[in-house]
Length: 546
Image (cartoon, helix red, strand yellow):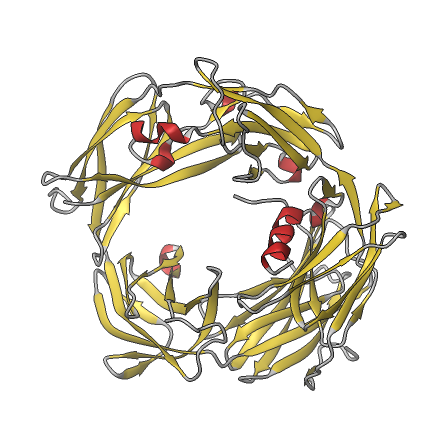
């Protein structure tokens, strides 16, 4: 669940101790000077004094510092000593929100060593407040209960906003959520004391204000700038009315049972007529010798149910959707079928990443495409501590890999695939899988030696709209993934962890009001260990693009 940008950066600060020719390409000389970012923070247009502005490096490195400065009497700040790279910047003012919807989580910038970046201004509005009391059916307060908000403004970005540990009920059961952006919200809690009465702790239904587990019947709370919505109370029933859900997992081809498959249950929440969200996952229930399963005390609601195949198998599972209304649900049949699989090992060639002071934890992702059948998809492979991997339940198609390591903060850092071998023979990163083929003996060799592309977008014949989106994407012929990044407000972008080779770099601009799509492309050559500089020209008068 996400937190407001000011809360995120505040946490990070505390944790840290608190382009001259179009379409040209050159390699720049590395600089050593640190950069400075400055600007002005205002509250409803007036200078905001003593507001902390935080800068965080967008990289997974335990030694990566955060930087901060306070605004003076005129609302001016200067954050100094910033190294080059991609950074995020935002004011740390928990009771306030950034007035620009497009920058509500802060601003991303591409910093060059020695840069002096001026005019990074933020205008703040006082956030709203929602407060109330959470009690059980007897009127007793529920203490230390986290409160969640579900935003229902489609035009301003719907989504679930949770505030665990920072906005909890006190010893009276009272909560007070502050720093909320103007909008419309549904407020809910999930009483963790009820976990033992359910098939899985994650399947506990939320109780919405005032006292319903049906999200469509929840009251909608309007939050305005600086307003306070009071008495948004929630009554949580002491017991959850639930019903048994039973069924069987079978093999589609043989009608035989699938034994010891973990049942996965996802509760579907209806946000409005056009959107839903889901929460849940594997339960503690597994199929028996007959492939049968039983879930007890499943509350009324809409669900998706599936099965997690046993490890190192190659089954394809077909999930089904069902509703619990007011009685037992029985006779559900989850079908599986044989699929293809690929397995092997991952090894690192050369020096380890700069944060690797502990054993490396690799990750592998597979991308499967079958253009003839109009099929495409990707997902993670199962990994073991020894670097071996297994990806099962695959359909016929062309399989490509991406891989890397988990960093110390849990972020996945992508590394370069130097080569792929199958039983010692070099393979392209495009392996064709047929039928239910079981491919073994794959060896993925990774390298941390990679290049980067630092670019600037020059705009001709018009101006970018505040509602528009400018994105840079990179695609290589032997790479399953597009490297993509947002272009910052200064027209700069940085794409890192790029292997040596030739790529197609595309700048996309899209604006929905009025509808406009423009793009420009260029071939880029990347050299290992070097940063390639490029200037791209985007002509807004070009209407030949789709």
